[in-house]
Amino acid sequence: MMGSRKKKSRRSNGRGSILLISSLLIGSAAVRLGIGAGTAVAEGEFANQLLLPTAGNEADSSSPSPDRAAVGSLLDALIARENRIAEKEDKLKVRAKALDVAQVEIERRLEALKLAEERLSATLAQAQTAAEDDLARLTTVYENMKPKEAAALFEAMEPEFAAGFLARMRPDIAAKIMSGLDPQAAYSISAILAGRNALAPKT
Image (cartoon, rainbow, N blue to C red; front, side):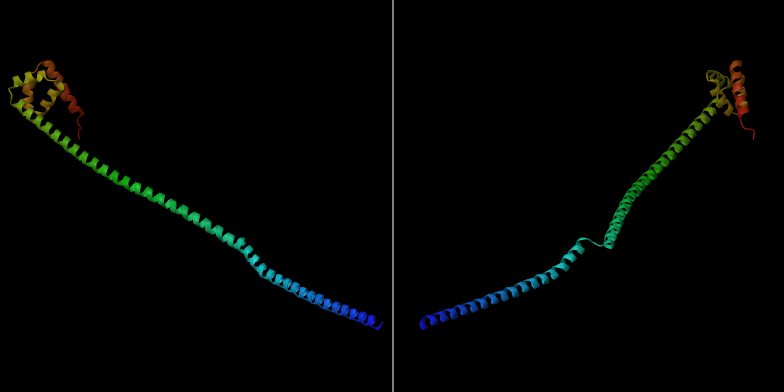
């Protein structure tokens, strides 16, 4: 009986020790889990605190403030206006160069026209002088002819042409030639000379 009691007490003592050791192990595990969980939670909160300002900064950088947007729009408008002004200035410079070229061409042509007019005037003056010289020489020739011979020649001329020569002659020689003309030719030439004298200015 004594032996069976000792065996029972040993078994109960072994079971108690096992229960005690198991409880200690479970408690230790629970404490470790609690500490690990707390640490994980703390680390998570710390990470969230670090990430929140970063996210805010990204939001701020991605969406500019109204002041920055207004300044950016104003700068864009100023740049566009400056570009338009520069383009207009370039066009004005091109037009100014074209006007300068046109002005030079106009001046060149005016100078050429002036020279041409001067040459034409000189040519006309020379021709008029030559014609006047020719008429003066012919008038001298007719004056030196015999009145009858000159009268016969003047009757063959057109009355206007003959009147022009007679108007240049000395009155006494012209009278001798007129006296030798046919009465009809003398009348026509006299009418032309009278009309020229009537149209001549009195003063």
